[in-house]
Image (cartoon, rainbow, N blue to C red; front, side):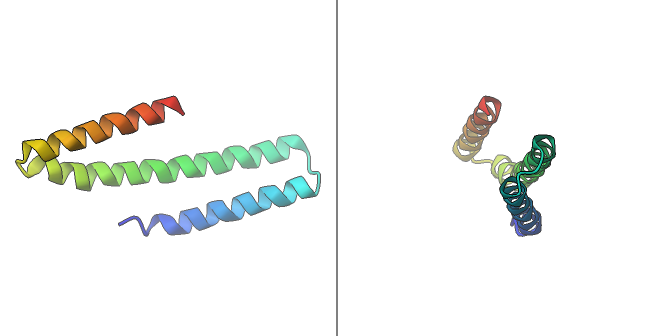
Length: 88
């Protein structure tokens, strides 16, 4: 389901390796911080894509199923996810 994110995660992994190299080479702090910020943005984009997919498929299917218990479980799951996102 989330295979499309693997390429992005591979690029993020490459970014992290680049940051490690920058640190080992004693590169300037602003350059390292810029790369860290870019990596964090890339991770957040993957996170948003997976959340959007979850909402469009899993949650929508659960709500459309007519199973009130399953729908309530998905709603509680989403509330928990948003609480955790808000805390980070």
